[in-house]
Structure formats: C-alpha cells, structure tokens
Amino acid sequence: MADIAHRTQFDGSSDDTESGTVLDPQPHGPAARVGQRFHGPVRAWAATTFLGWVVMASVLIGLGRLLVAELLPEGVGAWDRSISTWFVAQRTDALNGATAFGSMLGSTFVVIGIALVVGIALAIGRRWQAIGFLAAGLFIEVCSFLAATVAVSRPRPSVAQLDVAPPTSSFPSGHTAAALVLYASIAIIVWTLTDSRVLRALFWALAVVVPIFVAMSRLYRGMHHATDVLGSVVLAVGSLACAIVVARVSTAATASRSEDAEPVHAPSVVAPEVPV
Image 1 (cartoon, rainbow, N blue to C red):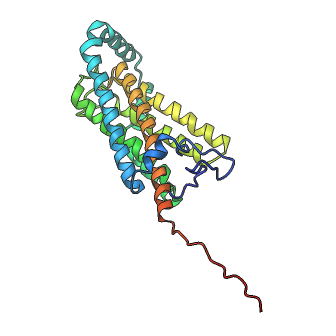
Image 2 (cartoon, rainbow, N blue to C red):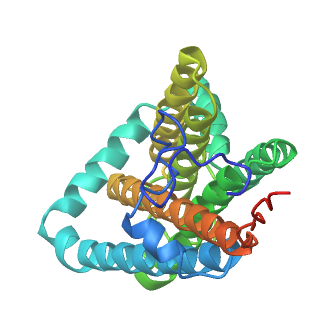
Image 3 (cartoon, rainbow, N blue to C red):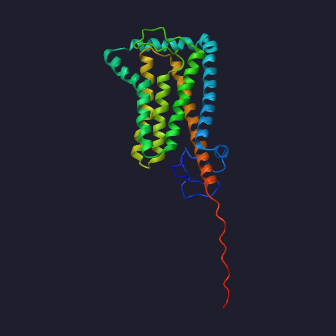
C-alpha cells in the first residue's frame, strides 16, 4: 500500500527501471482501473476480499457437491478408501509422533500465531501492502472452507482416526489449505521484499515442503480422504490468486487517493521587468 514504493506509475511512465512485484498493479491494467474507482484502500480491500470469498466459496461448494453426488459413486470413492487403508497399514509409533507434529503445523492456533507474528513484523516495517495480501488470502481461505464444510457435509474416512475430529466435515482439508496459503504467502512476501536468493529459496522450500507434510499427516492420521486434500489445493491456490488481486486493487486505490490529495499549484506569474 502507501509505504510500498510503486515501481510503475499509472500514467504509463516508469519510476525506475524495475517493473514492480507480483503485488503491484500493471499500468492501465484491470486492477489499476478498478482501484481508481474506490475512495481509499480500505474499501478496496474489503470489497475485493469479499468478492474473492464469494468466488472461491462457490467454486469449492460446486466441486464438493460434484464429488459427493457424482464422482464418489462412480469409483473415486473406492480409490479414496484404498488410500486411507494404505496409510493405516503404514502406522508406527515413530510416524504417529511425526505426523502429529505435521498436523499441528496446519492447525488453527499455529497458523493464526505465525500469521500474527509475521503481521507484527510487517507492521513495524510499515509494509501495509504485504499485510493486506496475507490477511486477504487467509480470510478467503478460512471463510470458503467453512462455507464448503457446511454445504458439502462429507463424512470422514471410515478408518481409525488418530486425532479428535473437529465439528467441520471432511471436505476439504482445512489444515492443508491453511498451511499452503500461509507459507506460500510468506514466500511471496519475502520475494517482494528482498533480492536475496538464499532467503527466497529457503522460504519457497518451506512453502512446498510444509504443506505437503501437513497433507500427508492428515491422510496418515485418517482425518481426510485424498480427494479432500486435492480440494484443499484448489482452495489454497484460488485464495492466493484472489489475494494477489486484492493487493493490486488496494495498491491502485492508495495511489489514486494520493494523487487526488495532492494540491494543485497555480502557475507562478513573473512580472516583466520595467526598464528604468
């Protein structure tokens, strides 16, 4: 938002040789045009985040109902059951402990805790654009997940479960989706704030490894079907895409408000010299 130096101006000229980050709107692009219609970044953030939630909740509910009503009776259900049964056969004390930790990495309290720490660090640095992006992605993911669990209501796998089942239904995997949105968002933010190849590689590695670990842990512990995890990937990727749009529109709205707030100076008039 305001603290982020805009690498491109909306009149088509460039501030410098850089072309901006993935969170910056393109000159004369759709996000720039939409953002200029809002009176401030807060309204822009709220409106586009709400729209992102509507889109992702609709997509996820549609996929969930298609899965339960059409795909499961046609053979996908048998594949799901075979995956769950295979994971149960692999259980050992060591893997039970490891997957308990993996499941915890995607739990609500851990995700919220990490997001708060990251948000505080970004606030200290006045990185409002990054905070808006992170908050939008998690908000869209969580609210879409809750809407889908109510609308789809899929039972959990019929195997021995190693965790206490939450009140939500099996589709999709909230742990997997939250972990993917959180760690990928952090990786994107790090990518926009630093040119260090080491830091970029480190956080992108975490963004890949941790969600996979969480997904495998949830399958191993009998808490989700394999198709639930696939649905959570769709949710997470869609939420991240929507959050990028939110960040771009909010940034454009900030730039537009700043331009409107600039005073217009009347041209100075220099009196002609009078010869003596």
